[in-house]
Length: 104
Image 1: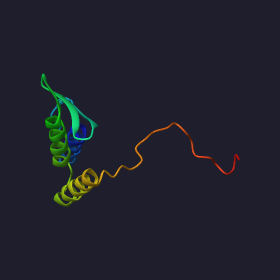
Image 2 (image 1 turned 45 degrees about the vertical axis):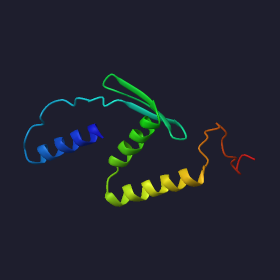
Image 3 (image 1 turned 90 degrees about the vertical axis):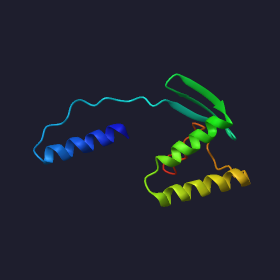
Image 4 (image 1 turned 30 degrees about the vertical axis):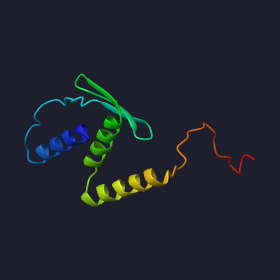
């Protein structure tokens, strides 16, 4: 996201005949990951936390970075529904390749 914003700014400045402000600089905002139902881990700027609080932070931050309000509402509803109904879609990477009819 940071690099995309930087490149967009470079393009706009070049189209206006201006020079880019300077090289891209990445700002590490931290790391977050869900590790289970209502459980997550997070680390940002030297702070580490886990459990339910980290899961809520993960949920809030991911919703916050979605592009439009409609997307945020839709994703929040889908996540809520899946949480309440314990609906689990296939999320496994097994390494198996689909069988190709031409090679069978």
